[in-house]
Picture 1: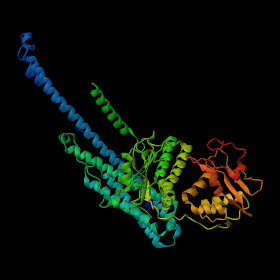
Picture 2: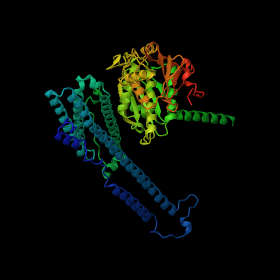
Picture 3: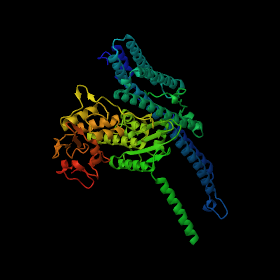
Picture 4: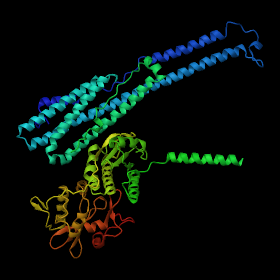
Length: 287
Length: 340
């Protein structure tokens, strides 16, 4: 595009930066839980301490006199059995608590990982749309240049639309990089806002083709239209699925026993990636 | 004792029926909107059933009057009815037609995104399916689109192994395309002039000239049935047919890859056939008739003599070649009419 004079070198530079060429985006962040080891260690210590206490309380202090004293007699419960049953009961309860806690903790980890995975999908679909901008700009502006090269107004409109798409794309990229652990609702709202602006810029570029039935009817335009619409659909699906897994995760850390472990394990509430008001009814890119 | 046996057998029967119901595969076609006739449903189900056998593609069709957005409906359905589950590699396609919203969407599973990109799906919907729908021929539109899907799958298989570079993944994530269905709105085929720039489509001095003009017309997506390169019977036939841009593209694409033999003439010199080697099975022989001076394409006779199978390979119809049989005396045909 730069070679063909469709865009200026400055625009080309911005486009390269905005679409991530030469500066690959960082992989989705998936923080580990610094307190995970601590949780397991605490449970092990609690279980060990309980065993020691039960053994210390139940046996040892009184000597064993005769076998008959500690053996069960009909209708009796011996001292040893009392100690054993106490140890077993407490041990069993602790084991149940340990198992439930471990399962619950692991469940929270899995749910949180699902949230990070779903966000990675959102990011990749947004990136996919960014990748379409250069070819979209090239097709539409190239056609307009061919058709009405001498009209300055068209050149100005085209330049403004390209500038806007490139700028909005750069803002979206910055907003995505600002997202850390998906806990800050304002950061996700900023991504949504930037995404909507890119969307609007793309629509503006597509709208430039409105006056050209030949361009709209061309297979090349149909191809771009199909790709763009497909990308919008993927973004919507990724957003819906992200919100679903966030809902599951947020519910899990608020309900018992997850709520008891959430603070200890560093699990915090995640933000939703809300669609704009009326986004589901947004008109499709269709000519 | 007998009572216990009877009760046991009854419980076993109920459990077995329950398990069978649970394991029963979802049908290939679910016509909730009652858009199709019974025989159309059966034919589409049978044809799509072969896609699993031949290409490992689980292609379902679902019609609905739901008020939900067609994208959300398609994504949910894809998971709910297990599209792709009948394919070894989870190759799933789902066509959702909603006459209430007048929309159609072809949802592509993750494992087929590389073979059927969004742009291709948009193309076959808008350039093939919708023209049939607009003509009120919903079932034909579905089947004609399936032919293009088969063609794409075959070419992918020939190129680098169908599905070789696909990811193996169940489900879908919004890939595919949707468009207005325009059911029954009426369709006008893209037409064009009877002249082709400096070169007239007529008169054709030889079958080869007529064929060349035909390919030029198809390449220009000129579906004008009144081109002088067509015999009167062909013109009448084409006037009744739904000719779509994708069909014309496919003619050009298919024959471009085939090597025509020299024309063969009958004894009177009034009929001719240009045929292609039997190995090039997608390129059907073309019939020509000389009426007066110019040679004309006799697509009407050809459509009676030639049929296409589910792999888009041509074969002789039960009616046979009729008066054009002279051109095939040196070929043998198997029991299904395929040339050997």
